[in-house]
Image (cartoon, rainbow, N blue to C red; front, side):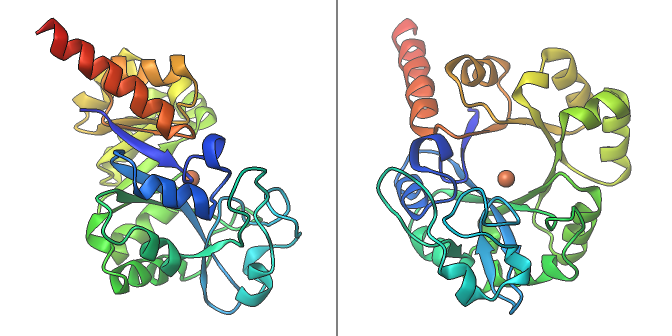
Amino acid sequence: MTRIASHRGGTLEFGDSTWAGFAATAAMAVEEVEFDLHPTADGRIIVHHDATLDRTTDTAGIIADMTAEEVRRAIVDHSGEGFRHPLFLEELCDIFQGSTVAFRCEIKPGHDGRLYQGFVPKAVAALEAADRLSTTTFSSFLLDTLKDLSAATDRPSLWLVAPAVLKLVGAAGVMDLARLRGIPEIGVHIDTADRTLQAMAEEAGLAFGCWAAHTRPQIGKALDLGVKVFTTDRPTLALDIRNARNDSDTTRR
Ligand code: FE
């Protein structure tokens, strides 16, 4: 069965990386919750997509240059329920205590596009301390981050292949790179996914998934392809579509 990952806690349904979105996701029949991490200047770990607070909160600033206290004064901008400050990683782990939803943890670069020095082992240790590491898969667009991850943990990582990378490096080059680097899985934007690419990944021994399947046609495409997993900003819609398909399969049998 194709796995569904609630992207940033279901951005289009609950806001971007909001408390309400993660709490809703924890109670859903999805398999994974996707989220992104950034360090604060004083060594805490914040669950937030952007490296800055500017786009999604009532505050401006670079998370890595701020103290945790400063970051926590921000309110995540979401017009629905659940106006709350950005979460600490420990709080995300608390929300998912007792939930069967697995973690899909993306390690982002800083606002300047550079890796946070020494951040990967800290994130791994924090997940371990919360007893969450054993159900975490990591992801990154950056090959150097994937290298840091494989040095820090035995947990699986997947390479998020940006459309521009796929275009410039080419599908064969992407497969070669993944194989050379010992990366077991790739994820591509749903709009760049097709049967040929999927077959190439499988031939290279790579698991194949998609990201950013937010619309009904995109979700349908991911399910038609039967990819391993896809991320979506609309986890409720994705579940409805998958359930409806499973029901009609059962009826046909
Ligand atoms: Fe992400």
